[in-house]
Length: 497
Image (cartoon, rainbow, N blue to C red; front, top):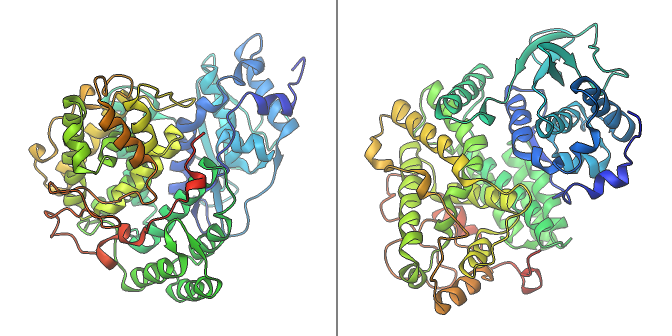
């Protein structure tokens, strides 16, 4: 490129990273990792929407060359630690200035998304049929134009590598048919990988670690760092309950406490669930059901998380004061959530924890803070904030799959349209001061309540409102993961950015 933009200037043009790198498994370039690379490109491309025009050339080929040159000049290739696979967002790659081939691909494809260059993601290997390398391939004038930053020149491919498969971002296209194709492809990949059911204990552990990392960045504090070390070590134990128990004892000895309570107690209960083999989706029995359940837990529920935003209004006194529009949308979300958890045998607290992390990741606020701001007419979406209407095709497809695979009844899910999605700029018009103050207080509560609300009165402090209709679910320790979340976030961290 004629004038290479500096890395310092590039970092100024992207959002501050959340310092989060998602660990996808304990080794091997699995089918799920290929899925997550595609998902991360779709999720995070908007992070470089201001930077991408700086790389635009006279034509698409020149632009592709500029992307290759920029990454080669500023980002160092460093393999993930042995036995780990990490997925980095574009802003994290630019902040760290190092990544592996997955990070290269996510960054390059994000640039091409913003610059409207058609492309696909190619997975390859030296031998065998399992992908070991990934790189982007631009499609220019109907011709393939590989951009592999691991190689010194664009439009070249490693001569010793063979193509395993190409993937495109099906989910970026509008329309339920395309989303159906995407979900069916993800289910197929999950079946081919012959992955086992997701253990409830390991899922809880991963969700808690993710939440802690998100809140660490959101509240701009290092107070959670010791807790993160324990949770990360437990994840890296790879489902070994004895190792998790040992970490639990170490945490108790160190008296490590975080926003979720004593880490040692939490890890001890995680170890129990690992040892007992408690599945996260207890109603998934055959291979296809299990594959769908895994895709739902790992990919689809985080994607549609903002649809459940109003479920984080839990105090019945506040619910009674909600504008009719918000109340109706909340009821629709509650019906959908119960349709999913009941038919898959999921714990309600699991869905709520996934929803919380997804909302924080996409909206850069806790759900309670987003709701409070909206009630006062001052909701300002973060850069690249989720477009709620884009969630709808995924919800429709998820409902269809549950009906198909689990013999569920459509009326159980209700009819959800674009008008049922949260509209934070208009839903709270006419909200009174009492409601606004109450929602603001909820946003400052130290304990988010993690289960669905009952139709009764407001729970007492620290008590979780459980769904009385969920007796068909296998209860977890102390009535669900949310029971492990004591009063936590200290007042110093309540100010949002």
